[in-house]
Length: 418
Image (tube, rainbow, N blue to C red):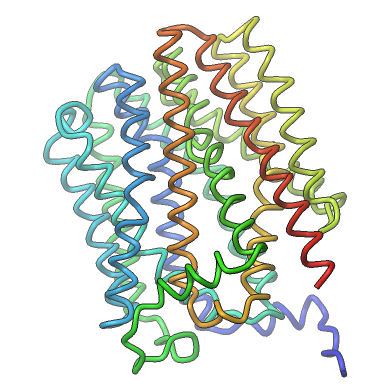
């Protein structure tokens, strides 16, 4: 069997066509929206309600309901068109920002479930179509190069925008006007993304316009019928236990301690610098054979540093821990993600069903995320107002990744034996 000729780095980048860059314009807007929301919607809730539990419940509802909206998005994608599904996602995001601007601080107190559901709906409808677009607008040969471009843009966004946003919000002191302008900015980004979506090349190869059938059942059977597929779903569940709460938990602990958005912006920037350094190190030392060890060792190091929070948990030490956690995060998340794509591409029954596969996997991820946030709430219930609760939650959430390491090792062994 002849192998494909090896492409140079220049050839791989040159093979990325205009359709991908048109898609990238739109996706960059959504990337900025979702990233800024993950940080500052929590500070908004904490500032307006003064309740850590409210912020945790907001995230639990948001993560837990997203698969429900994704199921609806799959039906709409198959029955009408992926572009209609995605644009409905933009409408939900727009309604989210309009609602918060109109209702004000009551959106964080009396009606906080409404923003949670609108954010969930927006992301759910957007990412079902996104999963088809990534496959349509890139090839196996240039997908890593395209990911590198997207990752570079994401790094710039995550370095600059949180710091600028935090300084801006802090300048308004106790006034809600800063948040009103901030959410107005996100509304503008949503409108821009909608406009960019109108210039995308239609999907022609990854989805059959004549196929009106929803393949959720086939995707589920394709995953659960074999040991590798089942292991992927279990791995995704345990991944969600940590990824759900740890996406925002340390930052809201910092904000709860100091009540200053500027500090949150600084923390995010420091964390991103640590994450970039971690990514460089990850690329040098982690291979497919070392994925399970990567997750286990990184989890152990984070747990060791987190244990120091029992002794000292002021906002300065929380920022130090946050940077350490950000730097090691890729050693936990990327082995799981890369193995997921490897498995999906190796199972014939899942080809052409990217949206359905992503939806099924998202259900297990959401179950894990809800369980992780639930553990965090439970720790707070037993140790109300104590740093013991926060530290115990961080350790428990991170320790769950040992199960991921176990499943990664099992899946790698199964793939090697095939």
